[in-house]
Image (tube, rainbow, N blue to C red; front, side, top):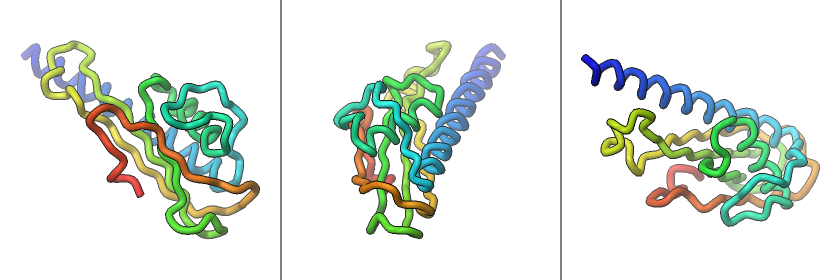
Length: 144
């Protein structure tokens, strides 16, 4: 019975983290498609300069997720040309972790993934896509 209760708690926490991750990606994508890439350059990015336009957007996404920014990984891209009506894609990865420790063997190395696509409505600056280094053992193949 204890395993069922703890399993339900672990699932609830993971589901909440997924919702938070997806909402942060959606809010970041929404800001990007109206050319409001944010001004924060103080976040920690792996493999990306936070002072670039894409870096500022990634910092914005990390702040909007509300999860541990050092564990959150972000990729922003525009498949095709950066023009009005084209797609902006924001992808986010966050590692799953067992709160109780009982489910570490099952969750170890797994991540939550969220992808949001929106049409670009306004263009203000030149945008170059960027991707942080994914978590160990993961990649961005699921995100265009």
